[in-house]
Image 1 (cartoon, helix red, strand yellow):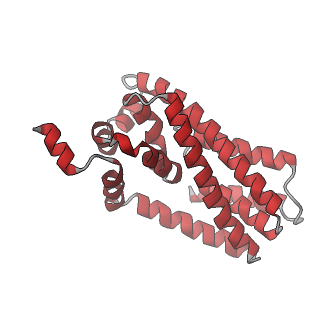
Image 2 (cartoon, rainbow, N blue to C red):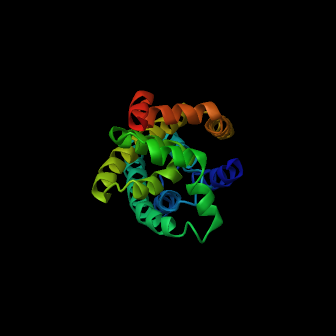
Length: 227
């Protein structure tokens, strides 16, 4: 993931070397990268969060609120569209559970099983929002939506909220650091360190247990169901 980010960062540095505003072509490329990342359950190798923050960092260096707003709209829209594609792609993936070993492992993993059995129906929005920020949750969300029969209209409304929140948060963080006019290599190092830290945290069993405690039914409710 860090290597993927480095390649994307080099490309962004190249297109922004002249300190000019993003072109339509460059904005289109950014849009499609996020669309691909969010629209494919198996495309998590694209470092979406780092990509968004890096692009926003260059907007900050340009001191352009217009670019800030454009990036929020572009990334939020790409995320919404990608989530919609992912929802229907998830339906196909569910049907391949007996044909593709990777799907079986992913669907029948301990975390996915606990989510499917114990997800609190009142926490769907929180689940989808967390999924927008946390990569390994992001791949489980559309699969769980089909397993638990969440209607597309409901899923999409929640996806709109999650996508807007994610885009505003990531663009704001990147824009702030870019606005400080730090050397480009310093900004790249900061983002790489943040990405590495996040990867370490989300792989922690304690972090996964924390996520489960937030989105699953309370233990008392589970005990009552068993009784």
